[in-house]
Length: 324
Image 1 (cartoon, helix red, strand yellow):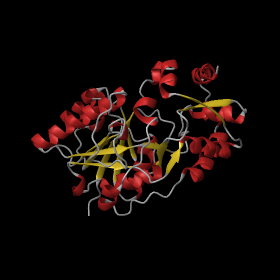
Image 2 (tube, helix red, strand yellow):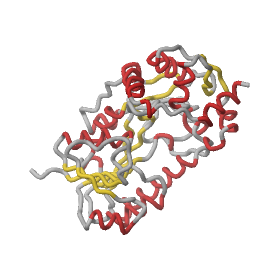
Image 3 (cartoon, one colour):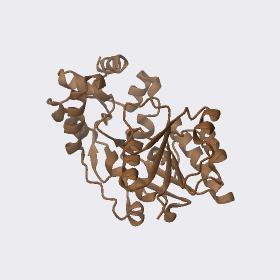
């Protein structure tokens, strides 16, 4: 039986590193197309083609007219980028996988748990509105011409390279130094965190799966925490209990305009997901990595790689400003 040929556009990010590695381990022929600048190394046995996806001539030269059973674009964020993929791969792939975002669901959420049928509307965050527009474009392509799209909506997915909290390593550094950090709201809203290795199981199970063509799936874990819990778990792994002060999401975004919508359009809202649909199509999808297990791996990894311990002066200033 011929192995499924999968092209990842990107392939070395938080989600795609785990997904491409698992796909390769399951015997798929995996090719990555990216600039070759990621700190995460490609999985063993994976083919890597080097090109900037925004350079059409370079991409065409790298692909050399090849066809794939699956094309998964991990770095498409706008309708223009999705249209570029449709133009390039229509008729050249049996399945096109688009990574949307659970942040596209209506905010505030009218009913929990969130399912794939929850309406899409986010007036707060441009990132989410762009993802919705991409979905609209792909839905029309499927409906009008049968373009074989599968849309995935991950929520907050993390791995050992990332700190799954607002402030990143800057927050961990402050916790270790006994300085206060800022948490939005009162820290009691509910948030779902998904380890990339768990996400990868659902992802890989949809590749080349005819039950996924023309459909949409959210892939998240069932591990739900308050933000107070998240910072406490990370702090304990780092060896200190966090000193938390609170500010409204609006106040934080007013003080950091570059973060506009990240809180008010996503993290400030309680999100709990119903993963019934992905479990029906991918029976082996069963998230097993909780944050209290992953937190130690995250901190140990950062401690063994000091170059990852990047303190952001702007984030430090933001915390200090909000604390005054």
